[in-house]
Length: 294
Image (cartoon, rainbow, N blue to C red; front, top):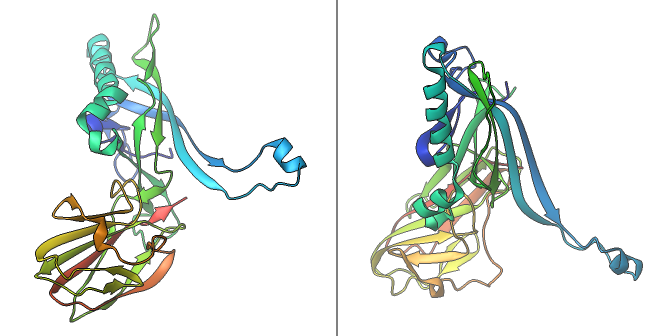
């Protein structure tokens, strides 16, 4: 079983309740569960694959990573004593949890994307003592689940559904965080994943700051910010939402950024040192990041 207890945040919908977090059977839910029997995950890529373009001397060009598509198939199970009604109740709960329109209606800020959580085994018991990694995609359904209802269901009903992740990367469920202050201006971000991670920087200001606050070459003009909270999302991503964005008190304030238009930060794989300078009236600088996987 690849996916031990898994869940989708919209509707708090739970899969594989017949298993405990360590993969051992949960006897209380032995016949009262929604089982994932099969999973496929595919990420699209875009480059220049036009045959005429290549024949005339063109190249494949840059590679752009598109969205990730997750397909799940399985069955709804119910106890013998209440099979017809229990199966139907679970079906209705699944249809509501995985309705794209309802997902968008309930979370327009994320375009209807919610966390799909699951875990996978690992041999890296140094970082993951239980031998499992809690993982997450931020995704929304492509359509309502397909239900396979038949005569003589014998205690279960099949389903199939697809989820689309606009951010194609997979994240650990727990984000990393580094807090820097004028008294401790340098620290390490440790991305335990295998691809660079997006960053979010949150500055707490007690008053007007420096015109050239800097963190690893990324510069902000805080000379007139006053006592405020400045948030920088370095790119659009699942954990932090819309990116390439600077806000002050929740209001767009992109003009605070004075470094070049192409200067944005990531958390490379492994350990990376971060340092803040010109820290007038900076109370704290919190760097949030993911442990990100391809």
